[in-house]
Length: 278
Image (tube, rainbow, N blue to C red; front, side):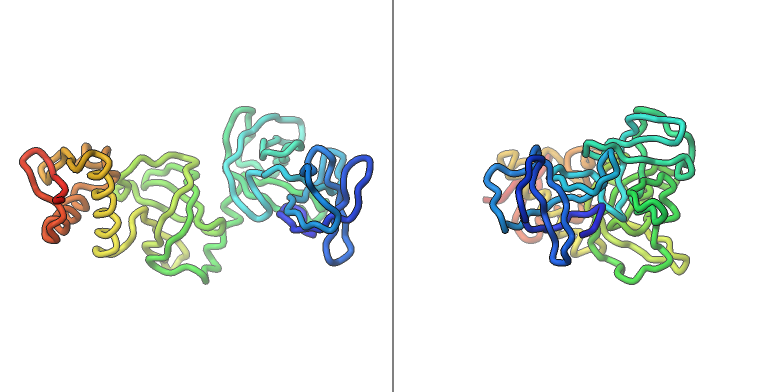
């Protein structure tokens, strides 16, 4: 049974305060009545999140936390005290950030990127805003160029946006390679562009390689044409901002995509836009 994670446990017995769930090693934990599904049966397996409640007891819940053990997330500060700050992570007991794990004194109402870890001394779940020390860029073994990954945007820089890759690594999306709106806190699919010898990782929002990118962009254009009755008021002379606004791609990518579609006989190039060939 792992604290800070989801566990698939078996219903053991019912009590006046809830039902007890157990694992295959003889451990058990209480799931309070308010979280018990209506049609639960003895011996049934159930997926629950296990953590410590406000009285420091290990307890189970069917609520879904915004972060799990050894993960990153951006959470709101909902209270502060003389010992630290508290974050809303979707559970009844707020998540604690001690002063020693803050880059600066956190204030109520702020949203902050944090990492959730288990304090070995207290055996309690604790959040840290000093997230740089938890990245594993010095141990990259499961990434390679062009690989599809999930990223969390957490910081704007002079070069672009810093992102968290697959809850493990720190990466950078360059400003001049962003062709759609991107905001702090966004979670999106991206692609590994380059892994440097010093462990720094460049990330792209677009698939790498001409054919792969063209395939994705042509599908976007075809979908947009279908949604607009077979016509689209964009040409290779359109303003790059208009193309980015409507299609989330650069003008260069748009021209390559419509060039391919035209050669394949799928679209017609008109003076005022492009049209599907039916």
